[in-house]
Amino acid sequence: MVGPILIIIAAILWAVDGLLRRNLYSLPPLTIVTLEHLIGTILLLPTLWFSKDRIKQITSQEWSVLGFTALLSGLIGTVLFTAALLQVHYLPMSIVFLLQKLQPVFVFATAVVVLKEHIKPSQLIWSTVALVAGFFMTFPTGTISLAGNTTLAALMALGAAAAWGTSTVFSRWLLLRLPANTTTALRFAATTLIGGAAILLFPSQQAIAQVTQKQLIDLIAIAISTGMVALVIYYQGLKRTNASTATVLELFFPTVAVIIDSYIYKTSLSPVQYMAGLILLFAAWKIAQQNQQLLKLQFASHQVKGDGRGTHLGYPTLNLVVPQGISLAHGIYAAKISFENSSYQGALHFGPVPTFAKTATTLEVYLLNTTVVPQKVLTGKLPIQVEIVARLREVIKFDSKTKLVAQISKDVKAVKSLVPK
Image (cartoon, rainbow, N blue to C red):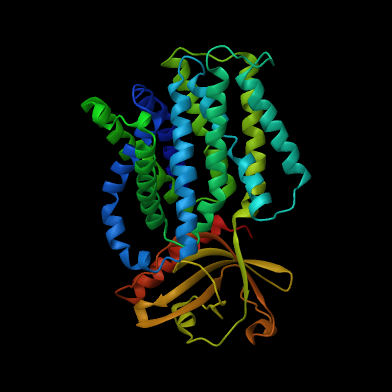
């Protein structure tokens, strides 16, 4: 239950985030986002220091994806979201948060364009339903309102959803190659640098000298609660929760936002908007379920002879050939293992084995729900398909075999909750 609880906490924090950002209405959105990420980067300096050895190994491709993700998700998405929230006189906060749940539509679109995925009719249908619902939620009469900045605020919220949804594919790519804490720290640092450069290019966004003590306190509060800390809590929860469950639990985010709007700001939605909001959330959930398949790392390998350590520990493993060119962070993963048209839950180790003073990189997997492995697999004559589902933890050196076995038991329990049988 720890994983789902952490996701709910993160979702509630994200909903409260709107309250804090609306107190910063006098500052330009770019200034708010840059200072927020600067504070987060300062708090994450210890993480950057302890990750310095892994950071030195980051490839140019990983740096490029990290920079693009920081630009799209950390800067553009957050700036548009903040700008939409600052349009308090034109669009209720709850609608901004509900429109943000259109992210799965853009995950699907990005996967089609970037990953060359084939369009599934069901995804196209539910994406259309979600977009239409989002329109009627914003304009319940069916007529686009040009009064005030209603349309502009809605487009900003939609732009934020597009930026965050699109970056999800690239963030997932990074998280399967770099440790989650390192990825988070580097993303905050990169967003700070990009935001600082943007402030220099756009003088109209320069208001750092005008930040009051109260606003600085609000910015620090965002960083240590609804911003950086909420993201870390969410990642820890996601490690322990299967994707489809996490998607449902994230609906606490817009639900709490609607409650806040109703009780604190006395803003109520019309029956049409409530109905459209429910339809949007359901459609987004359906799309998100199908999107999970687009965000997984897959590769093939073969069995090779190992040292037999797993058998002595009570967890016999298949020792696999490390595929050439694999870009995966050293760590322990939940994986789906397939051979001979059957799939199995697997706890996968990739990296050295420091507990036994083995410095060479090894790739081995323990199969949870079978003890019968075909001879063709054991002799390396039959390929083994590996699908990475989630990263569980770093490779750790244990003081004793007892502590190692205890941790493996925890890893196996996590795999059971993350990988379908």
